[in-house]
Length: 445
Image (cartoon, rainbow, N blue to C red):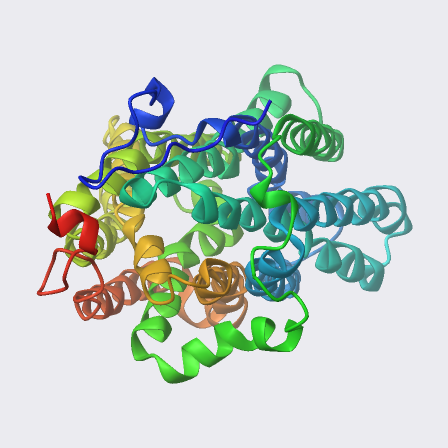
């Protein structure tokens, strides 16, 4: 039976039958969607940090070449991330999620069974690149589902729960699963990629079969025949609304290091610090394990302290400092032979994970820019997410040979400072802050 969201009263509170999940900001009708999303993203995250060492060790790829492959994949991710919101408006989030799962599984099978075994570089690029359309349709289709059904007063918290599930999988438990597969169970990289596929199938089944909520099973727009208008709404918003463009660019910077680090940090750990790929996977796990609860915390803090202020200081500024520390601290400690070098690196990584969570209210800002079209409004935000998937590896592919590992880290830290300036300029989007009036029911309280 579908459990419908409780209506709001004039004082902004939900009805008396509100349950514990609703009080936590977790939409009860979408519960199995959050579980399925986590499993799906664990599967997707398994490969994130082992793909480059796998291709360089077993298939003769260089680091720039691996970066180019992930850049091609990221272009597909960016396109799909943008389209996922508008298509969710038109077809319904559930259908978009189903399409995404099908794409992921089909092209992963082509990648594993045919492309890798044929040793065809072209086929590897085609199969892996096209698979990039898969996870954004699944994950961000579900994000639209949340945005369309969650209690408006707790939207940032509900979105925080999305990132709890998302980040628990990609890359936190995904990296931990890969580490366990390689070090505990003794499987090789190729065998570990099959575990990735199995987890994606399981997650898709849980979400698509378990969620019974009706809103997401159909179009979210009143007139679904206005296909072109809906699809281009996100581009129109970027062109006509300067704040929408800044949301997109800030969201891109938020995730650039996540995908850029996956390309060159494994080699940095081995060649510069004398550690192992497994230790890099542990660092990744620590970063995002800390990030998970902080997503909820900063979602709630943003609703109280202010979305823009939270993103600026708790997100961008903290990320700039801790990103720099991820290289400077271990380099300094290793050069001096400190036994605590790796532990200190994990500590800095924890602060970096906290900073990444500080960007959570940015999605609420995106929705506030076009509240009558939540799916299309999220398109510009999703484009920022997808752009990071190719921008990070692209920067590595183009600049790594010139800047080296240290230069890349300095560049990423500088980008976070740019994000701080843009997020500070996003004031004036949150009701009740910076002179923006509250909706009429809240003013009556």
